[in-house]
Amino acid sequence: MDFSAVIVAAGSGSRAGQGRPKQWLSLGGKPILRWSAEALLTAGAARLVVVIPSGDEPLAVEALAGLKGWTTAQGGAVRAQSVLSGLNALADRPADEPVLVHDAARPFVTAHHVRDLLAALETADGALPALAVADTLKRRGDDGTLITVSREGLWRAQTPQAFRRSRLLAAYAAWPADRGEPTDEAGVVEQAGGRVALTPGDQRLMKLTYPEDFAMAEAFAAETRV
Ligand code: CTP
Ligand code: MG
Image (cartoon, rainbow, N blue to C red):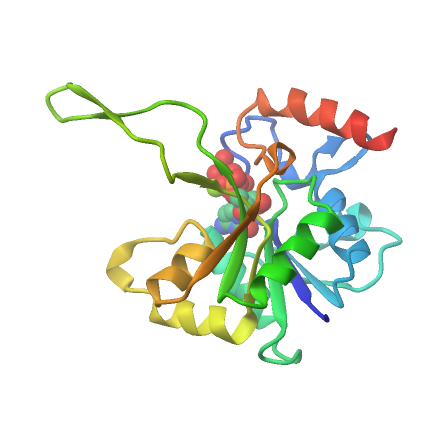
């Protein structure tokens, strides 16, 4: 099945504290953005849109040298705006084509994840990889009291997330302005009444967010090369 992909890579990486945005940092000898760009193109993406900060075009050209089938779009102030910018850059593709929306900060996506997502999308309005919550959860009340919350049925959402592009754009258009910024696309499609399916999540689809995440990612990168 033909599909396209959007990688959002227009953040500033402030929590990672590495001095420059995560997407341009090297991991296992190649830029973080390149890991998922290579993987999604290898998995068969007919077109890949890489959403980057304004002015960072030369960095993308350097990071993705030698790869074919990608274009850039300009990022927005918040992630959701970057996603929409990427989706709009696919306007010449069929409206109901599956599109995967992926965080550059999750470098270890594979063709296997993509296959699961596209298969799940056949019978749902969206699909995302997710891991069951492993920690015990607590809710702290305003007065400081703790209450243990059941983790039964709770999942940690990852990316890539798969949708038909027209369905996702319609859901974004219907997102209530007073709800604040959506934190993932599945939430937007659910809000619009869509049914989103889960595929098996993967510890390797962790998002590189804090400084200590990079050591684990280097270990994954080393395993991936052998
Ligand atoms: N992202 C984006 N445009 C934004 C904000 C985020 O494309 N305006 C992308 C990031 O580049 C990243 C993904 O969304 O690949 C997930 O965001 P996050 O992990 O929060 O990355 P940053 O926003 O870069 O990091 P921070 O929030 O720590 O500044
Ligand atoms: Mg952010």
